[in-house]
Length: 405
Image (cartoon, rainbow, N blue to C red; front, side, top):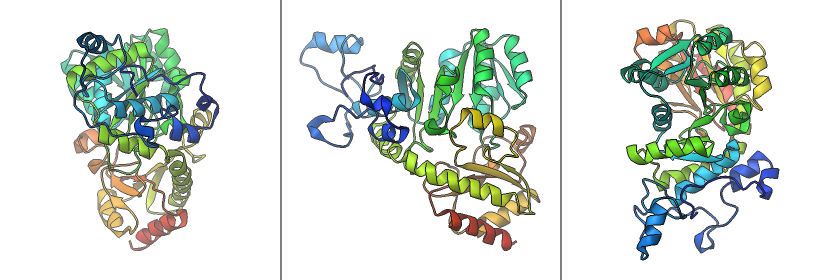
């Protein structure tokens, strides 16, 4: 906890040889904590004092380990970064105050006037807003392709690409992209490849091993797991993360130590939570396929899903998010959701409690109706973030809600 800029996993440590569930618990914490504490201390100090002015200067320049100001680095936050390095097999990681802070900061770090970014139409609504509204103001050319048309994406990359941005599975349509294939195309053009791994989590998908340069997480979601802390993390090579870290230090979207502590605590149960959540997600998806009021079900674990074979090849599990489209659109949505007994209707995901919500009030609340429809998101689309409740209770709850209609 005393190295300002190095959170690389110890390559000779025994933790590299154990399972990912064990790594989630012990990653970044194998060397012990101050005062022999068994849990990461919350270091709520804005600044760190030095009697030796020369030592202070060396730490400030990164020539010596230590901390000087928590906007730049913090001992509690550094443990979280080290834990994500372990889980994502990254050299370095940088934590931010929110998921959107990390997404926007990474894009603004590597993009500037005259550059060209290629991505897809299916992405989180806030990310889409950056592509449609903010980057064009900077003079960045943005190309958004049909999400599962890999040939069209490759064709646009071949025309010139400085950064390829992938989100897979996508929010909220659960479309799947072939990371290895598209990353290879981008590398041929010398582009930086960025991937949002929030839905998959490090347990199910390892983008860095598939050719991605920078992996992003909204730590608010599955990493935290309890809907009580906000944060974001970027992982990758130190040569890239040093640039991202510099942007964060100057622009200020640093993660506070208490939120870092809560996310660290949440990650320790990630493997247990995901095991139950994914089992229930599959059961709910299979039931929804039998429901007459449902037009379509989106879940990569279903053999009928268009990206199922790609998901099987690059994912260890299919995640805990299911979405479906209701006949009758928003009128049916407003009747169905209030009937649920064991679910929140809220704009979040990844929590221990099950959460339902339509795209217009969750993933794409920033977008107008016209924009959502242009992105292929109908008013009848509902996203389920499956919690850790007993599977049979979640299925029964959904059945009784449909029966009430």
